[in-house]
Length: 373
Image 1 (cartoon, rainbow, N blue to C red):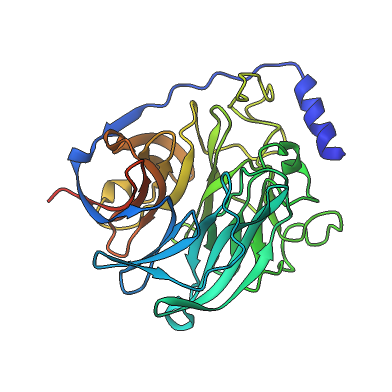
Image 2: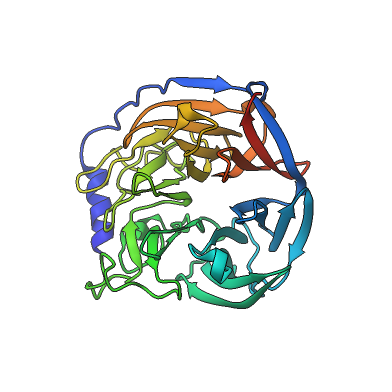
């Protein structure tokens, strides 16, 4: 009950949400770049991983895994047989093991369960030709009775631990402050899906041992930047209040005690855009862009964006570049809004070009963005 009392006390405190200064946004259209279509006709693509040979694996929300090489698309077999496709749940993220070149091991996140009890799971397997072999579900988060806010992004840290993002289940937002629940959390796991002994709350008998950070809403962007050593995430706000966050072990990111967004009926969720004892966001969006997919640019194709964050936008139908000065946001640029396509995921490939997965009524695409010749 402690987390409920914290929320109640926050709501009765006097004060008002501070007005946020308008962000200065630079717009660049598709005509400012060279854009190559690597593949089209994808069905609700969700996550992308580049293989060492320069080909790609793409997850499709409906429960398919595609291998894309030289413009040819083929299905990969051996996926989990309990993928729950409903609402915002389906086959989601994909990440290669750090030693993929030798182990051929990869990890995918997916929704499992039923309408009355569902959650996010991790599937581990090895890629062999056009099939996944030795596949097993190594982790299942606690369930909820809602088809929304599954999270599902993953990333590896240098110590070989796996980070998984989760959502608050939409109707269960207070659980984001409850350490006894997986909802609204980011987790840190071993490669076999078990919690690590040095996790922040491993000594707390009332907390889930997997928890790395808490107080999140629906985290659909995650990236570890090896050059800076920073772990970044972003999450959906309600009506406004999307956030880019610098993750720290054991930290509380405030949801729903603090947000610059409002509820869908226009009501104030909390009078606070920041709250004592919680981590402030690095960048936020009001109104919401519905961020999905996150990368930190490292490469020589776009030197002006070195170290900046690349953020896909669903509702915003564009790709955003957040100008980072260390860990401070100092500006933003919106790309490709004229394409009017939802951007579900973004990565930087081995050559330093930017790849995005788009969604639209005429099918999803994998696009490569390069500087003009």
